[in-house]
Length: 121
Image 1 (tube, rainbow, N blue to C red):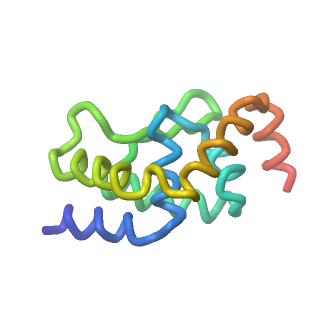
Image 2: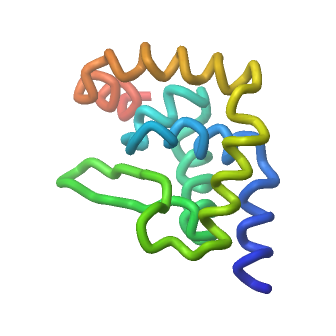
């Protein structure tokens, strides 16, 4: 029951659902997620912490970089079904299409430049 409640809590916020949809094509650096959502880094960190607690995303650290990706291999069936449901339900919404286009632009920005700008603000 606790896992189910953690997942439903995680899915109850538009920003967190947008993060999940952004991650469907691969891992992203926290700076890239901040840029996509146009939210404060602390807000994005809170969102990804909730997603991680629910088991929906995984964290990989590489030096000073923190990368998030969707939980895939070895994820419990409930998590896999929840992620499939999100993509099937809202993966082609106007917001998801806009985010996907914006994410392409963000991925063209050098990560060093993007993250250094965010650290200065």
